[in-house]
Length: 206
Image (cartoon, rainbow, N blue to C red; front, side, top):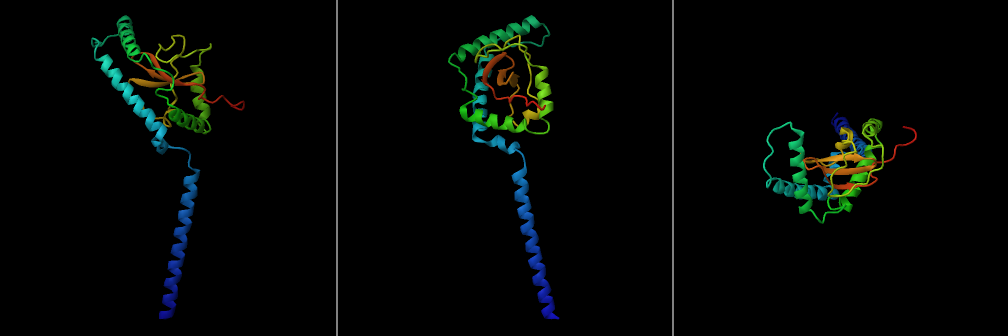
């Protein structure tokens, strides 16, 4: 009887160990099949981008602090006057600003990978539909540190894409212009930086 019990225990341990190995292998395979997620936001390129955004935000707040505070108002003229004054001061403070200052090469590569992955997901058609609704009817030439063109709709990045991109402070937002991803100072209506051609073209099948 004791021999049988010892044999049974050994068989139990062997089977248990085998199950653990199977679970571990399955877990590794599942992780390998999991699409890019929030953990990718810790990539060095995204970290560099977020640091540049925070640095700009400090400048924005410093400049805005020199202006008379805009009181709560619905007067479009007062709002526009404040916006223009803020834009002028920020433009002067960033006189040497150029494309790639915030969307650095490393950051641009991460954005390209994240957007490419997002546009291959099952929800890509919905994102494209949202972007298409705000598409401009004419060619637009963006310039860093210049006012966002009035003729261009404020096409926001769809939520399904935003979850793949670094979060931004309230003063700054992503915009889509044609195939370009734009970083916009919302309060100053200034183009801070952009990545040309990062939004993939629509496949013929969609």
